[in-house]
Length: 196
Image (tube, rainbow, N blue to C red):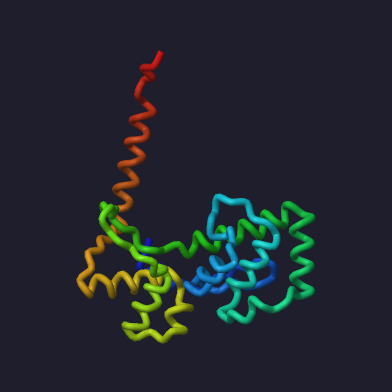
């Protein structure tokens, strides 16, 4: 199996269609646009409405911010009605979005460190990533629209090359940690309950 970096660097355009729109690879422009409208799509534990799914499909199928300002099309109106009146249709489109995000969540995994004394400032992290990519040769459009996981990996590489103390967990280390967690959980379950 390919490691997370290889998968992130070679991610193919998704073949997922949501509300009749073919989605593009998830990028920082998509993230910021979804955050700007307060979309619950990025928060997987929240229930989403038909309008949330339709707005996400519109955002994720384009890199053009003007697309967001266009009025609802006839086709989109049909999708809205369908999802509002048919719970199965709503769940199907929501499941496609969930699969879309799962397939592209290939960020590096980091060792946890004590950050109690770290001042993060008010700079939004997507902006820091875009600035890093542009500073290192990407165009502004490339930085905003490349797949997000690839952008994060490149940003981390640039930071590491500049001397930042960043520890990425290798795939083998991650698998070993997950296996250790499973063993510990099984060990805890096997312990007899000593409470009365």
